[in-house]
Length: 449
Image (cartoon, rainbow, N blue to C red; front, side, top):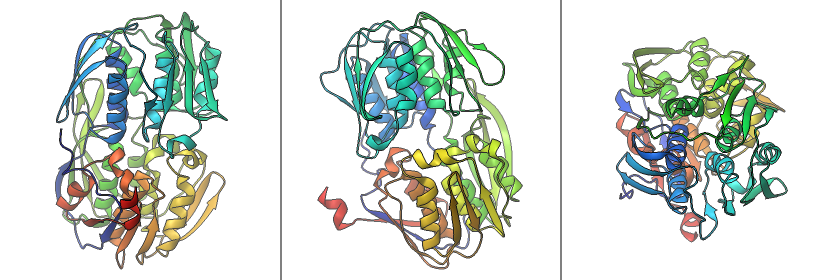
């Protein structure tokens, strides 16, 4: 497929103030579900068809890694066909598997490759090489995996030929990626694998495994178990729109959609929609309509209207349900009246950037008062004056500041936006079709690479 018309040009964004946005749009497929559908379908026995697949850089990195291990995958637009190789059918890659910026792919593949008969190496770009991996390699080690890191960071060197055993593991913090890696490894492990979580995290893996014939045992709280080894069955999947991508337009609508903005086919998994609760508490007008299901995943359309927002204290129990949406939530807070306080969000320091620091720094550049804390931030709502901010190569930060341009007094220039294609290849065209005024520019620095 030719992505030339979709991929964001290298360089940055210039986002201009607009009086109003409107219309309707459909955001691309869910990145988390696209990763999982690829990985699990690859180790099934039988053929799987995926509709609504997100053909972003991150998901294509996962696809290419699987192809490097002998999995036949075809991609036509957003439709994918996978010929599963079964639990023992993956073959040794001839070189390291480069996952680019895809942290989800690295952690989930670590679980899958720990059980294979061959050695493998997982690597990525400079940003991914700064992401902590001990949280997944240590419990996998307890299962019998042999994984070497560079002081807890990628690349991951995985030694094949290990016999994994089920363990009972309590996560230090709620993490869907670590939980998923352990459950995937548990498909090959002897005995019961139990993952206990101190809080709610995304349950896409559990929902998908259940459709593939795995008998998942739910314990008290957030505990989940499976008995291995178990062979999963091929299933077709319809992938809903990514809630994290919809989040940018939800906030944009609250800032400028005087006549309303309709966002269609949005995934409404309850482990993902904390942002809706938070924004409604801030006074946001968001109607959830036409509720339905794509397979096991709930879906709905969202009608968003311009609203007068009020700063709030965000309840800590909502933080894991909105962890990827905080950068754009911080933009909403900057446009709200009064103080918005977030605590219990230290996990934001370990994303593609230190999102607490980078967003705080950027908002101050735009004239907003902020105060960082160890695990959160205080934002004093005010008037965005425009200016130049650095996204630090973080796709969600870049798109959040592009949204901020809607409500600014002057243009907002966002530096280092190349990575937007990792999660949202057609962000610019979709945004501008709704009335936003964002343009890409090419920098001298970007051309040197």
